[in-house]
Amino acid sequence: MNRRALSLCVCVCVIVYSTQPLLVQRPATTASPRTVPIMSVDFSLYDLEFLSTADDAWYSVRVVLEDDALVVKLLNFAESADERFRPGDFELAEAVDEFVRRFRPISQQLQDRDCSRVVEGMAVCASFAFLDDDIRFYDAVVESVHYVDHSFTKEEECLCTFVLFWKHGPNEGNVTSAGIANVCLVQPFPQIDNRVASFTKMVKEKIEIASLISGSASDCNASLCTNVMPDKENSHSSIGEKSSLSQHGLQVKDGVRQFGSFVHLEEGRIGKCYEKILQDTDLGGESDMGEIVSHHFILIENLERNLSPASIMEFMHRQTSIAPQAYVFPSLSSESYTRGAIVLDCLKKLKTIRDFLNSPDHIVISSRGRPWVISENFLRHGPFRTTLESLMPISPNRSIVDELKVAHRGTKEYRTAKSRRDLFMDFIEHQHRLHKRLALEEKKILQLSAAD
Ligand SMILES: [Zn+2]
Image 1 (tube, helix red, strand yellow):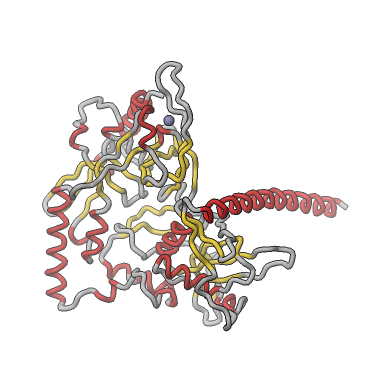
Image 2 (cartoon, rainbow, N blue to C red; image 1 turned 60 degrees about the vertical axis):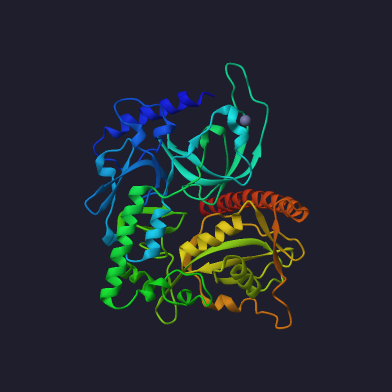
């Protein structure tokens, strides 16, 4: 396939789109080096990629210092789409550091003949098409590559397949197949852009002065999302945690994005642990104290039947420095495995755990080699009553340290675990079809009964 032809097509679409005065949905950052320069835009000015605070997609941008603000201008977008950052948007130095990490050099698009440069384990910037004229770029990791002979019918065409594990975007946490046209190489970042550097230097100076004036550093906020044991904030009502957002001094945007299937949250300027649940009336339960007890959780399948929740908690803390709550559910006597859940109040931390579990570099297995399976990749949100903790009491005599381990890619243990995991996924798939059939047959019986 001719990469340049594709780019031109996308670019023209974007130009047409950008003539609209109001951009409800941003189309792709099918930007500068990714496209053929047309019209009078000076593409050389758009020399950075920026991770948008609105949708976690990467856009080709140029940055401009206006008074004390840093303005991020998106290629092929109207001025109204500019993202503007002021010193007042940051209250902590770590938020400034996180902001700096939103910039990087433009990722490099590949010609078909260069596909061998894409290798397993590589971080890439991958395209996702919302619509023909709305293609956006998100971070992904190459889980595996299937090289095949190229076609030379007209010109060299890469027919290889790249299996991507998505770190952001609508496919976040999922694994999908892609062609070379969907993959761009993330470029090394030798140094921070000068304009970003001078802006962040000024912001940090202002933060320092403000903290001197107030006479106290903002230590209370520093603990908002730190991954240290004990994980105190997880025991708090999430409402209390959310109210501290304003103390952080970070602006909350109007845009609301739906995450997964259940969770609604406001996007903050800087990704921190301060998600706010806007709408969970169906899910938020009430405890005996009348307090809303609602958590984020992920379900795990194919656990050993005698696994203790303490093992999961200890293992997850050892691997990720996050201390979640964990539950192991009773199974049917006919089942050789059971299910469990990892529960947290902090969505960001749960995403970290989910990313760890979904990493293509390893598989979590039991001491007997049974691989964990995440069959539903979305993170759930809802009431998780503490009484569940008593479902599986920990056996006092058992060592919890060795019940779980990590099988690393490239080892025999990993290959066996992967085969077992694939088998289990097939089994789950089969079960899904049976569930649908059951529901259908039930409906038939009910319809017949109603007709009588
Ligand atoms: Zn190829």
